[in-house]
Image (cartoon, one colour):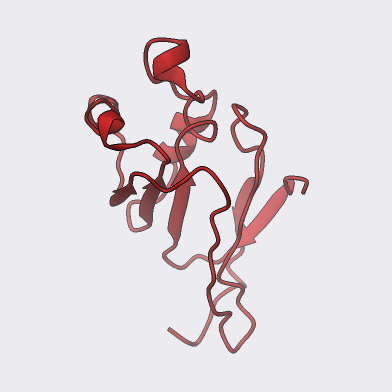
Length: 132
């Protein structure tokens, strides 16, 4: 599936669920480069997520990689709310309900490994909901 050029989002609080390896960081960076490294544009993207939004990282990294992963995130002042280790290497499925007034509440973007997401996320103030 091709990555969309643009996605319109409401101005409401969001939850960002982001993979680490190959999405935000160089895939297998600690083994290939000897360290973790952000993909070009990934750090700026993370810094641009509003403070009120929730950030959840998913990673297939196991317990043996937890300490150096958390250290990298802390040293780089990466804000996140939750991180899930051992998330598996295959599909990640999200199921969510659309709001009765039509607001779509689940968006999935698949990127090319080791190329940061090119999709532009644009706030559309006409997208809102009267339901919470």
